[in-house]
Image 1 (cartoon, helix red, strand yellow):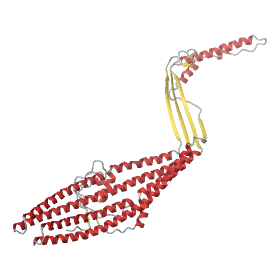
Image 2 (cartoon, one colour):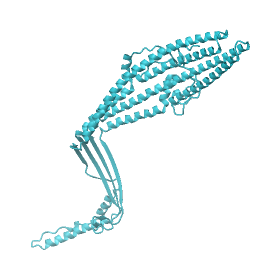
Image 3 (spheres, helix red, strand yellow):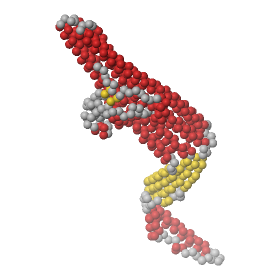
Image 4 (spheres, one colour):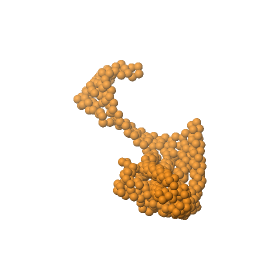
Length: 506
């Protein structure tokens, strides 16, 4: 029995997903089928490897933001709180007691500082462009993984179909073996054949049962591989919804190569590597250029003592000293031959207002800041000699640029060869499938004739088994050729980086 040219997707897969997925596809009814497009979409949502690669996109975006942020000034703010207890403190070889500062009260202090700084260099100016090229490189890597994931899902999907068809063929072989056993038994009963033919038929039934067991296990394995590739867990059998057609390949190498140049993610990644290396060389050369730095700062402080007695005593002592000096000066004026008018010494007196002022001025902790003088600076630096490290960096950047250019050229050559090889594989697989279709038709006819001849006794059971074997081999060869054709298309799509089949039928 020949297989139809249009191979149905007889895949039994479920639609209950693992706990980690979040998609409307995951909420589909368990009775709904799963198409190839849905399988690829589920893989994009749930495959752990792809999700891990996707995380690199956020880092690349922030690298670009950081590069633009370097064009803005930096700002810093700081605050401090301090406390100094009572006791004797040393200043070099002296102490506070020796300096007349005994019984110093505890001191509370606070302060703040604000600073702005800005540095401009050629490397900073080229930073955003380099970060953008690096981000494009990351996106190309993500795209490359996505293309590979789509290929892997497609191949796993096709393998489930292949193994499902293998089970169908194994069931057909088992049914034919059982029919042959019934036929041989009937002919033995009428004396047409011997018991040896019946025994050989029983052996064929046993072999067919083993083949069926093996193909069923292969089908279960292929389903598990598909589930793992999609990153989901499916536990319910569904109906097939997609079909693949064996159609002649209509692509041309001169058409596919320009398409691959624009879509192949590996070539895109090499191109981005070249761009990043160009920016890297430009930045390395900028180490010979001057750097301009701007800075500005503002600050303030407070200082409060736990007791104002010492400050009041010092103020009173200063007033008394001024009064005594004034009286001594007046006495000196009276002793002159021509005395001078005396100075009013009553103005030197420590009042309650002075005491209140001292107490009030001490109440500043923690936010009554005294402003410090602001500061600003402009610096232009030009490095003259750094031990040849700058030239080494330039030469290293040149080498990286040369490597990137060679790798890009290598990828171009590999892409053209891969397109030619992949297209050749598709054409060969298509021709092989056509040949295997004809071979299967011959095997069908041969088996039909052998069965008729065995019924009339013109051939032995061994001849019938041989025809059965040829039929089974032809069926599997055709199945392998058909799915080999679709596998070759999936690999060619991964090389081109684009869909070549168009939408498949649901």
